[in-house]
Each structure stands twice: as structure tokens, then as C-alpha cells.
Length: 438
Image (cartoon, rainbow, N blue to C red):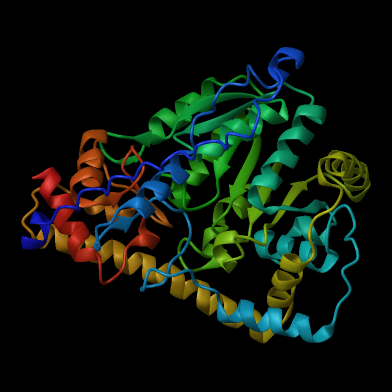
């Protein structure tokens, strides 16, 4: 506990720069401001800072040597460093040696990538793929896939233009869908009291939503809570959605990264397809391949026939064309090289399993250390939740104390990125959390 007595050193006061005096020979400019009209941007208000970026900026400015950043949603190795998968390095090396051209991809992207992305999500044996009923386009990562889907549904979905998203959900969901032209409404998802899934509230809200509503579903590793339905609960959700003729919009940003098993993480999506749901999917390869800056993703829809696929695909292209014309090729080629080579694919699956297992082990270690310190609180939710994020149950006041007195940074709602925990900092983190919760 001695380390808890350490406080961050006082922030260094910034020196005030001396102002240089203007040379005496320089004359003041003629009153240009009087001749010039006021700026056209004069009434643009200051926008609020991004919550996650603000945490990172505060963390960087902190001088305390044991500071911990649990805000950033990107994988880190046990040294706290960014991690480039060996399979990605190998795939990129192969591509470099092929001296490929840099020509534009088609509107829907690199064909080899979209084919393999669809197989990863729906499984190679999926009836929808075998029957040629999946429309798919490469996108600018998962965010771009969500935006394409939002705009396509706003334009062509024949019923109410309302999408229901879980409470809470990824912070960007609301903005993406609103800017796409959809109305956004919430449905209950997370039970703050029990730090668990509010299944009863979820099912009731979906039952009360008007027929043919659009329902956003996190396929796995719910962001930000880390609380996922069990297979049995997914089946209950499926029944309600089918009964109400709702349209399911899956967001799958963590396939393989959640449990370490890509097939297991795709359970909900594949079950819904088997049950005949009308649905679409946003995929991201940022987390599970570590291709954050390459912005690799895909948007797909399951339709009724190959003939319908042609018509729907033509309209998806019309959505994409004025948005960004066509997607970048390099990241998609890396993903295609990995997914299309049997040996490299197997290596990648092992690596993504390793990333998932490191996160799972950090969850267990944090829980163990909190209990060893004598905490009487129930911390079982740390290990029952899944994926990169964990809702700790800490209050805003406790989060503030952790930041100001212990240099532990997380979002105001107590969400932490478990990837930021390492074998080196987990003891200090546990001691800090214990200090503010005992």
C-alpha cells in the first residue's frame, strides 16, 4: 500500500513567454479590419472535446511514473506497447515483394477481401453465401460500414427510419446514424445495479418498439460494457425480433478478439441468418488484426435472391460513390493475404487467440488482487464480462479520485480498456481501485 501514498508531482507551471516589442520603424497597418467583412466562421461555436482523446491528452501531460491509461480502445502488449501481429508483418512483406500496382479498387473494394470477409463472418458453409444472397462492400473500417448501412437504410428501408440502439452503446453510434438520416432511440441493455445484462428490459423494449423497426445489435464483446447475451438469451432476443418483424443491424468489431474463437464470436449473427432474419452487418478488422490505421472493414446485407442481390448492390454502390468513391487497397490486401492462405490464416487465429487470452488473464489477475487486498465488494463482473472493455461499476466520483490522486485514467462512467492492464501495473491498479472503494 506504500505506493498509494505517492502522489503525482505538482504540474510544472508554464513559463510566460515574453512578448517581443515591434520594431520602431514598423508602421501600424491600415485599418484592414474596418475594410474587411467579419469572418464567415465568426459564429461557429467551440465543439466539445472528444472524451477518449481528452483522457489521452491528460495522461500524456501527467508526470507520475506509475500512471495508467485505461481509456484508449486499442490492444497493447504486456509491455503496454502497440502490437503488430506477426501474421500481418508476414502478409505485408509478401505484398511488398509482389510489387503490386496502386490502381483504384472498384467501388465495393478488393474482391478477394470482400469474399473472405463474408466467409469469416457468415462461415464458408453459410447457405446465404452458397445461394449468392450476400451483398458486400469494403468500407472505411467499422465506422464506415455503419455509415454506409445507415445511409442505405435511410434511403431504401421501406418502413420507419428509426434505429434502436442499446443503452449504453459505442459513443459514435448515435452520431453516425443521425448523420445518416436515421432517428435514434434507445432500448434497455445494461443493469447498473447488478452490473449485468438487463434481459427483461431489453426484451420488453424490443417488444414495445413499432413493427419493422431497425435494431442495432453488438455481435460480441459489447462496447462499452463487455456484457454479452448467452446463446440462450440470443435465442430469446431472436424470437422477439422475428415476432415484431424488426430488421437486425449487427455491429461486429471484435470477431475472434472477444473469446479467442472467431466462430464462437459469430454465433449470434449466424444464428439469426439460420432463423431467416432480415439483417445487415458492419465488420471491422481494426482490433482482430491490429489494422487500426489501415481502416479495413466491410458492410454486408443478406437478401432473398441473386436477382435481388444485383439490385441492392447497385444501390449500395450509389451510396458509396459520392461518399469516398472507393476504399484504400493496402489494408484490404493484407487481410485478404491472411484469410486466403491456409497457413497464415491458422497463424492469425492463434495470434488473435493469444491477444484474447492476455486480456482474459488480466481480468482474472485484477479480480484476484482486489480480493487479496481484502475488498468486500463483488468483483465477479470483471471476469464474467468479455472483450476489450470492462464496466467496473465505479462511480464518477471514484473515477475522478483515481485520476487526480492516483493517475489512473478511464472514462467517467468507469469503463476501462483491459488491454491497458499489464502484469507490471496490475498491482498498482488494484491498490488504487481498492483505496477508492473500501
